[in-house]
Image 1 (spheres, one colour):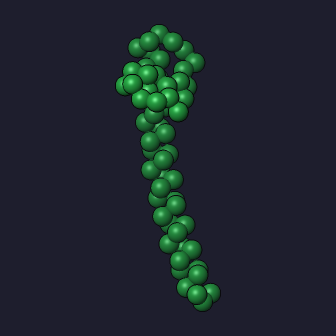
Image 2: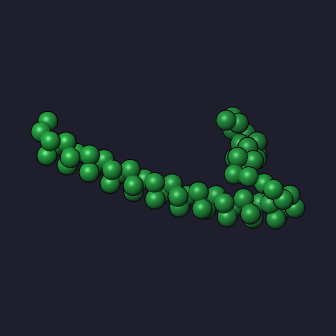
Length: 65
């Protein structure tokens, strides 16, 4: 692979990574909002995304991980 080909491939990989990061950031924001809603519904403050994940796993009968 030439220098130019490597740079072009790297640019494509970085672009894909940046797009995935943007998607992850959007999902993280959605989860943060859901944490607030769940905290209010359960009247429990200080809830975290990990705690919500465990609540989801328990409620849906999934393996907590």
